[in-house]
Length: 271
Length: 263
Image (cartoon, rainbow over all chains, first blue to last red; front, side, top):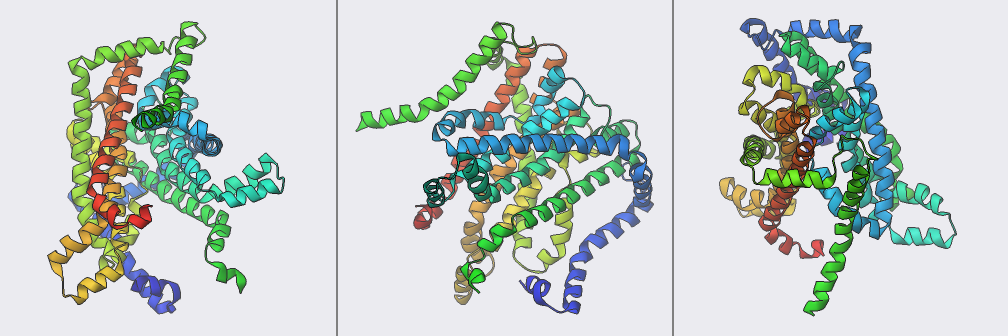
């Protein structure tokens, strides 16, 4: 609680002190790891400085175009497909009770299948090119988006919808201007959990029958005992995970600002 | 009365059953008539392979291997994550010290550690258990932290004014009030655990369902491949139902207490 208050309203020195407290542990972990790994001579845990050098060598920017760009392209395409399909199907199923009843057991079963198990099928049907990897990312990410969209659409205030019908708004207008915006906080929740899933499936899909990508790179590095290269890839995936998370949070804050303001209470609007 | 309840149950289930049977019948027709590629065998052939697997010992052995990794990883993660989450969530110094490292470690995709796990643990069960435990640690930790931050402050103050502290307070106030969060954490982590166990089997070749699917694919036994995938889906649904029923039972008293919220 104290940290919270200091972060919001405290003076600069209080805020700086609170930030310093928060950075104590991460910095000491890094320093301890650096010191230990430099002396340990452990084959599997190379010196931190060597990992940093390998990171610079591989990812800034020698292998950026050959491995990072293909990975991120497939991630973006699979995620976009899952978002489009999940939101569209979710609006349909959420608005239509018969579709909800008919699809529930099937959806429950399909989403229980671990997506990596479909990799052998995808390789068989779509080959070892980018299509099979995009398919795996899309099929894994679609479930949280679909289920959250359905729930979000079902929670819509009926008075608002009926008012819109009374005013003779078209069906398309009602879906685009009322249903989807009203469900958007839940859709965002689904998109957020799908994003970390997308990164995981990107890596996994590149570890089986692949020729490039970050997942392919770290597994190849391990198999050829290029341990510092492997570590540099793991660090890159960590950086990507944190970066994607922060980017999502920033976009969500911007897009859903109206929602937070509307729910901050009527007083904020009256004054 | 009984008859109308029976009929309403039929009308409740009928659309869902139809929603499963219709796509299956469509697939059967399409692959029998040769519209689909030979990589998609008819549903009836897959069902036959599935039935053969159910009486086959090696199938249950593989399911057992997968569930072994699932259970051991989940248990280790819970033993580590729940105490850590309770400590971090109790608003003290621990929360401020560990917030930043958690924010940075949590988004690391667990599967990035597969190559490292191969080096350190080899290609047997311990590899799978490590990966599952790492992946499950985060949802369990976050649920415990959220649960602690949601303990009713009025209850806490009341308990403090009665002079109840230490273990008594923990077991009679804190633990009961965070238990729904812990149960939800277990349910979320369970599906993560199944995905990671299967991934590890598929990529590393640790024995289990994931490896069996890959072997079936590479030996061209496509009905078996689909049968194993479908069976894993059934296992996933069954685990989810099992955990939900345990969850409901564990927190029933709480739902009764908060009757107005549930209604």
